[in-house]
Image (cartoon, rainbow, N blue to C red; front, top):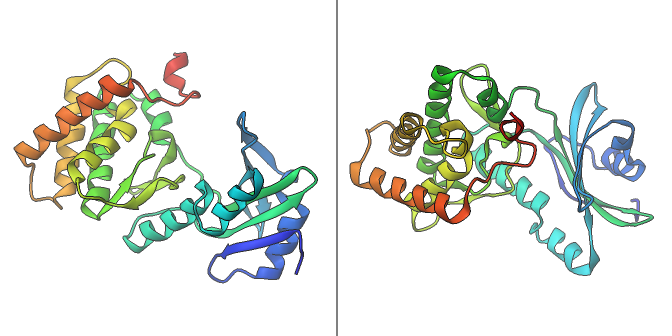
Length: 262
């Protein structure tokens, strides 16, 4: 056992010793750095086992952060728990290989390794779509969050840049640290998911398009009731909450949103 590596979660069929050696060597540093933010959090694309892997590495600052890691209370720890919750309900997420921490010269790093997911995100598809295609994307976005709601799941970070379109018409969620079981107010949670995932796909954040907003909400209502049809009272409440979210929080589009640069 390498004293500079601690493993919290291993994927099914993965070998602990192999991943201890890989993490200790920081194998991802020979790959492609995809993203690095101001807090030193990085996303890498690395190769191992004859395939591409996504590696998220984040500094653990101080003993409190390390304690949160062991309780699964960090962003990456919640991602592992969220992936398990979604998988149990039939949703697609990248396969988790390992979650661990590595001691480096500058301190401890938390590292999550998953399979790499190729494909177009909902956000990039929206940026390239015409008005008719955007209406279809709005419906798909609504169906997706509606299905989450009907499965008893809430995703506070279901923004379009975190969702990859699949060829079969479904979605694969690539960042699920905000996933948890639904609470006592599913209508409010559905409004929040539409507000987070639906801003760009429905046009709300980039010049409101009432038809696309309505299509998204109707599709979400159908999905949340497993196809039984929209409930007018619930739909009205969701729309009112969505309007309030927009007034309170504005446009939550990510900094790298291509629509901002258009």
